[in-house]
Image 1 (cartoon, rainbow, N blue to C red):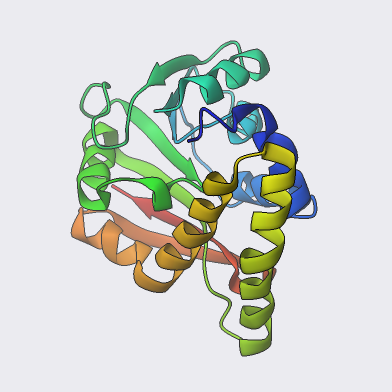
Image 2: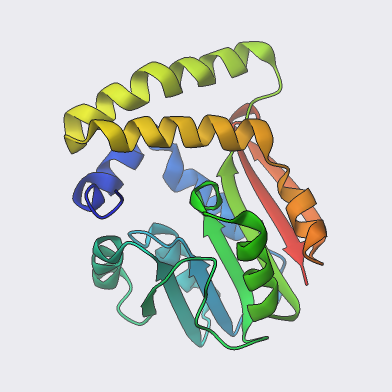
Length: 215
């Protein structure tokens, strides 16, 4: 599915978020603990927009991992210095304790098996390594939550279908956001996989959240 919408994915992200996705990625970087990150793995890297921002950390090694090869082909033009690996989060072909930082931006809701994926993240992180995740959530205040629901149910599928010509893809994205926001406790996932909570940052009245943990 993501291979099919790769060419329109970036433009749709900017339109559907009213350009706020760029601001969210900047805040994602600023929210990271201040320390040296020698090796960074960006999981569900997609077309590489977060990977571009991660360059400011001056890591010695960048990995971009995603099961959608067409998405990674676009990312290669943006960040030619990274190593690109086609794989799922459930089976990461990186050595144990090899990464200082693992990032996931709007991707964990697409993991097929959350517990297996988080076990893999724990495995590849070095001791004291950082995991940082940005994902959609439900706003707590009911008026903002209502607006969020209207945006997802009406605006997202209509615009997605018009621009990408793929009705099923943006219908899936809508349902995946709802299901994840309603049912998944990210910090509980971290805790279950021996990853300690550091902080949480809420944006857009809680519709977008950044979760940070440490091995």
